[in-house]
Image 1 (spheres, rainbow, N blue to C red):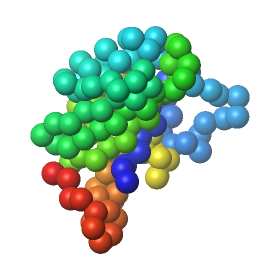
Image 2 (cartoon, rainbow, N blue to C red):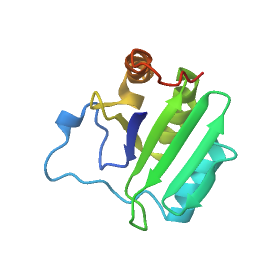
Image 3 (cartoon, rainbow, N blue to C red):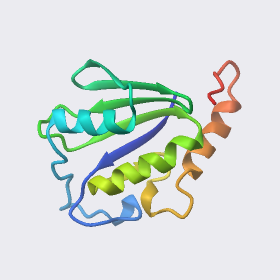
Length: 137
């Protein structure tokens, strides 16, 4: 169980998934090697068990990185099991690369939100109600 964030690049900036027209599609973000390097630069120590899956474990918690099969890549899915401390650097990372990060549960783009960690906090509150679920930092 994780808070899932879809990262991609569009032809323009959106604030909500409902704004995306049927003629829009994700643009190339970079080669697999470039994307893995960008992930590893932000999430130092990220490991790659195979070309399409990376894992990071740090003080704020863990993030799994699922890369699309395309090369160049057109999307990344982040599977976040971490505290809100992970959100700000992740948003800075997206902005630096011209990418957008959408919280899949709400359909909002995090870097356009006044409270980008709100979706993570809502997910954590939900997770904490489920018996036996691990409590991340």
